[in-house]
Length: 420
Figure 1 (spheres, rainbow, N blue to C red):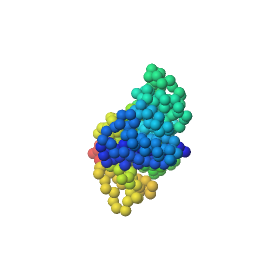
Figure 2 (cartoon, rainbow, N blue to C red):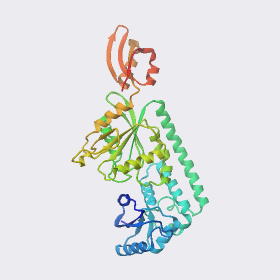
Figure 3 (cartoon, rainbow, N blue to C red):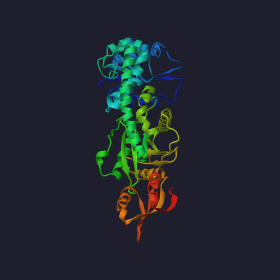
Figure 4 (tube, helix red, strand yellow):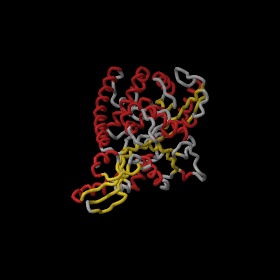
């Protein structure tokens, strides 16, 4: 396991520096690194050659030598020349937060789409830093920051990188087209869509699994869960059917993190389009985290960047079992839950049902006896509120969506008020 030293520059006394450093520590651990020391420097301005001042660089060198560190990770984004200068002085690998996150994504990407998106983000990061990073990339021997373009030993030439990026974008475009066709087919079916969003490791995948548990018998539909940052990068969509036969699709999306690289956000926009087309959002919050308000802000800001606007949202404050008093909530509507203790999950499901199906109308239909297959359809696909047999056939009062209302208009005897 590589030993690493973390370095953060606190520009103009940013009150969030300690939080960012804690998160950098978690990111390093998620990448399988051993953090042996962490330090910060108060700064009024950046030192162009090495980002931090000469005295701090000398201090870092002392810790590198004494602790036998293999790598130094900066919380701040470095230029190519800064990486080169620091590596020449420290004589170990130097990377920044962006490369660390990209590396985690490269390691966790499993689907073709995710792998393409990560590699495009890596190329976008690499291109403006070619001049400074040439020496650094040439001496890479695998490990953190070497996956993707470095591993392929691309010539450090902008035209070569542009060509490779164009090829990857074309390949990604084909994958995206296929995904759009799938979404278009789902839209034709007029099925409601829910997206689970939130900070990484807040409990999004766990919530999806708990909802599957209480509504489905097929546990194979569960998604991968692990207590670590960016445990999975794949968006997972599952169909949920309620006791009332109402159905909706629910998608677990990739988690967000502070200072998520813009290149990564841009590359993953095709995946995150699932969120923009949702009818309802569930924003999962780790209420036990001291900076959960900041995490909410980061998530909402990232959602705005990808074009998410005016989608009704339920805030699910998770890990209430860690509190002896009520959780203070600042975003509404909200539900407090403990996914670990499986409390509050039914309330989340009730919220979804209440908010997602406001377009349903109670109607009374007269189904002739010779149209018995329609009764089977309504039994399986809708919520029948009342059933009565008359001389002309079967009278049923049922909840229908606008598409069904139009399709079965000839059978309607009476309409009631829309559900709320």
